[in-house]
Length: 306
Ligand SMILES: Nc1ncnc2c1ncn2[C@@H]1O[C@H](COP(=O)(O)OP(=O)(O)O)[C@@H](O)[C@H]1O
Ligand SMILES: [Mg+2]
Image 1 (tube, rainbow, N blue to C red):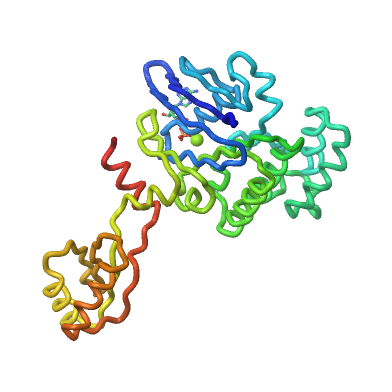
Image 2 (cartoon, rainbow, N blue to C red):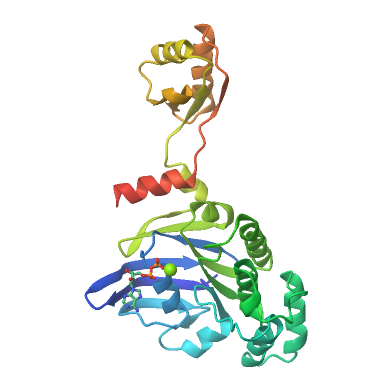
């Protein structure tokens, strides 16, 4: 099966500033791919090129099987945009905004589609109010609803939850999961590692104009240390545990009587740590698997560079 999005050796500079140096990645149909990177890494620039709103200096980019430079109109027909491009008109109502997009996309029943989308995004009651009166969360939901007009097969979500309150963020995540069920291909950019962990099939970490890492969230998380997380009741037990576990790599958190023991990641080695402590009569308040967060991987990778 051919890719829905194919990017190869993409380069983009603004004046002397090289933003994208050699960016390559691809998305299969129905895949959610999260482009992760710090502020200024070039995420929006990438999406703009794919959405035909900016031109690359060199390299290749194809969306829905169409070359963004040779066939921009065709690309525009298969995509939709949202996020930092919010095209919402504040002086129209929510309903009017949706109908307008439907008409621009030459749909047969723009009014009907608009009403359905208002309902889906919990905006029915506010449908006839000016968008200028909407909260930030409502505007973002309207923006997402607008991106769905015409049922695009490929959706770009540029930092879809930046600045949202936690409840609205969860709603947006649910909406993105629904899109995936409908086999929509989604390129998502985010600064939130947790968002990538929650939603993405694959993650690419963008730094210095290229991907410095790519894989499933699980692949990336496997790159950081595995181990046991121990908490103690008192300093005596904490100290004794350190003595017993001599020879292992430890991470110390004395102020909260917590110790992390790096293991090979196997269940046996994990159990061995606990057994060694029990044998020596060290009591501990609780133990568990060290939490591995994509965040740890991100920080490790960003710090190490390539
Ligand atoms: N139109 C532009 N002219 C000049 N510099 C730009 C322009 N757009 C983006 N940049 C610069 O390119 C870099 C990447 O920007 P951007 O793609 O918006 O990053 P991100 O979305 O990852 O935060 C930044 O340093 C930004 O200042
Ligand atoms: Mg951006």
